[in-house]
Each structure stands twice: as structure tokens, then as C-alpha cells.
Length: 339
Ligand SMILES: NC(=O)c1ccc[n+]([C@@H]2O[C@H](COP(=O)([O-])OP(=O)(O)OC[C@H]3O[C@@H](n4cnc5c(N)ncnc54)[C@H](OP(=O)(O)O)[C@@H]3O)[C@@H](O)[C@H]2O)c1
Image 1 (cartoon, rainbow, N blue to C red):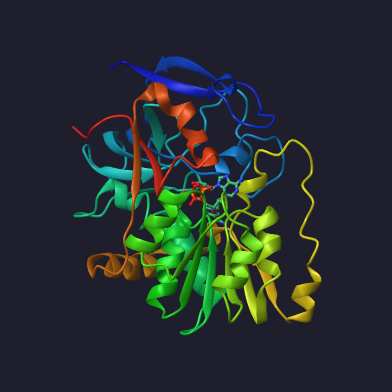
Image 2 (cartoon, rainbow, N blue to C red):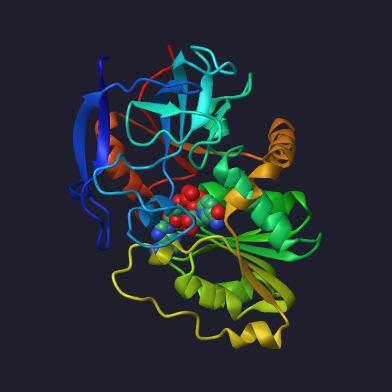
């Protein structure tokens, strides 16, 4: 391979993202400078937040500029190294973007550059031990502070973050109710992940079902979706409840401002707390989470699911799987096998 295939951001989205938002390009393979390595991307991560990175507005990271390769987390293999800590052939995690090759160095970009630990697969490092696993871990345990016997409600429950958050709550001795779209996802949550109750938001009345499935009310609500489901959850919070705002995917493709929940006074009445967070603020504590998550995986207490797509040409369409709910578990795409 002597060119770098890329998908560049061509047009900022309005509503749903489509192939027309990107241009395919082939450019020369870049050369690493001093202290840098050249990485060949093998796996790309797909994350709902990428939709926000495409917009020209202030956020926790700068927007992707028009003409730049689309930003994405990745695992790849070092093909050339000018850094003493990395050798050709090393598997590494970085922000590789939608392209075959990227120049990377530790401390550069939101993910920096780190080695995939021996014995762990790229798929694990990009899911249960990666950003979504850490998000579930720190969001739930730090902000949600679940205690044994409490009721934890999770939306986006069959996704990469929600499925791990719900299982951690089970491990902590909580009663866990998951909200997800469709029978297949709900059955998976109940039968495989052992959630206590599930709510199919596409086919059931969410407000009524939260009332039925949470007879002692909701102590922790881990919200991945926002919108009507957040409003319904707020109708059922307990005294001193903790509402963890992890994300709000139901509004990421909105073309006009979305009204907020009409019942925020419930937070006052129930002396409850609602708080957002960004996982990048917890990266100095990533090792603590990875150690505990890995222990649970190895002990058979925590399951993770990968939705693996393949093919460079399928990259733009794969992002939409997160918004149509086609993914079960962590959405990844494989570009190449390690050499
Ligand atoms: N705060 C942070 O630092 C942080 C870090 C990572 C992720 N997040 C957030 O966490 C959430 C989950 O991210 P993820 O990477 O784990 O993705 P994911 O849950 O694996 O995939 C997204 C899921 O969202 C659901 N969804 C899509 N449109 C929806 C809608 N209109 N209403 C309700 N559900 C909808 C779909 O499931 P259904 O089939 O069930 O609809 C889809 O599978 C996102 O909001 C993301 O932005 C936040």
C-alpha cells in the first residue's frame, strides 16, 4: 500500500449524516518526525459524539475542520517509529481518524498514543476497557454512586456504554431496569445480561412502564438519550436521586432546538441531583477502572458485545448505525488485519 486512503469532512451536517458529508481522497503516506510514529489503522471506533465534532460550535473538543480526515478513535499497528517507547509492529491505541495511516505521539490528540497491553484484544481495548467502558464505570460509580438495593434505570441500555453501566449496577447489588429499542435488544438485556426488567421504548409507553418496573422509584438514572425518555425518568425519581447525564443521542440529529424536560421541578421536590460529565476528565484514573473492569470480565460477571463492520468504503454509513439503533454493543469497523 503506497497511498493513504481518507474520508474527509466535506460538508457540515444538517439532520442525519450521509455519505454526502464526506469526500474520499488518496494522499501520500505521511512521514513521522522526531518523537513520532507512523500508525496503520486497523480498527475504527464509532461514537455518537462524532456527530457533534462535525458541527462548527464550541464543545469539549474543537470541531473537525472541513477538508480534514474525520476524527475517530482507533487501534492500529506501528509501521515506522521515531519514538524510543514504540517499535514497529506494536499495537497501539490513538485517534487515528478515518484514514489508513496517521502520525501519532504520546500526549497528542484526545487519546494520545498508548500500547495495547499484551494479552488484550483491540476489540476489548475499544469497548469494555476503552472509552465507553470507562464512561460507564466513572459515570455510574462517581456521579451515580449506586448503593446495594437501590434501583438503577439505564437508557441506551443495549449500547456500548449503557450495557456496561447496567451490568456494573448489577455487580454493585442494585435492581437494574434497562430501556432499549426493540424486542431483540430487550431480550438480550434480560436473558444474557440479567437486567431485572426491560422497557422497549419503541413499542411501550415508557412513562407507564418505568412506574411499573420501578415500584420503589428510581435512585439512579443513567441517561444516554435525553428527550422524552429523560422527562419520563424524571417523573419517577426517588428522594435524593442521582441523574447522570452521559449523553443525549435522541437530539444529536435535531435540526431545531429541542425543548428541555418540562418537569425539572421534580429535582427540587425530590432533593435530587442531575449532573453531566465528560470522560476525558477521568483519563488520569483510567487504570483503576480498567483493572476492575478486566477483573469482572475475567470473572464472568461482565459481558461485552462488539458489532464489527468491515471495509474502508463502509466507514461513512457505519456512523449512522448508532442513530438507527442497528448496533448491539460497541460499534467498530475493521480496516485491516495486523501484519
Ligand atoms: N459523557 C461522555 O464522556 C460520553 C462518553 C461516551 C459516550 N457518551 C454518550 O453515551 C451515549 C451512548 O454512546 P455509545 O457510544 O455507548 O453508543 P451506543 O449506545 O452503543 O449506540 C447508540 C444507541 O443509541 C440509541 N439511540 C439512537 N437514537 C436514539 C433515539 N432517538 N432515542 C433513544 N435511543 C436512541 C440506539 O439504541 P436503541 O436501538 O436502543 O435505540 C443506539 O444503539 C451517547 O449519548 C454518547 O454521546 C458520553
